[in-house]
Image (cartoon, rainbow, N blue to C red; front, side, top):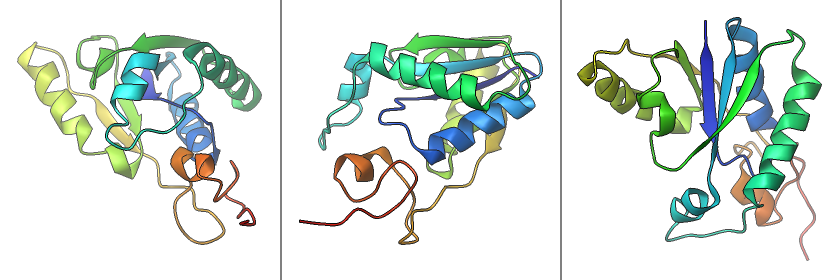
Length: 158
C-alpha cells in the first residue's frame, strides 16, 4: 500500500508523530509526506494566524522525525503542496490517506475529485488524537500559545 499524510507540521508534536507512524506502518509500497508551502500554511490559518516555521525548517524537522521513527525502512518522499487537496486528489499511485479526526471529512471530497477523474478512492486511515495532560488534544496552536510542549506536558503560565 502506498500511503500519504499531509499537513503544515510546524511545530511538530506527538500527534504528528502518530500520523507519521501510521503512514509508515501501512506504507509498505512507499510513503508520501505532503508539506504545505509557506504561502498556503499562512493562508490556511486566516483569520487566526500564528507563527509558522519556514518550509525549509519544517522539512528538516519532518525528515529528522521520520528517520527516528521509521522502523520499517520505508521509501519516503516529501512533496510541497500549495492548495487544500494537494496531490492527494490527483496522484493515481496513492492507496490511502492518513488523517486526524479533525481532517477525516476532507477524504470524502478528495475521493469525489478522484472518482471524477477516473481514479480509485483513497482508503482513509484515521489516527486518534494524542492528548495533553489536561485531556485536550495536542496541537501546534496550543504549543505556539505556550500552553503545552510537543509532548502535551502543561507549561506553567506567567
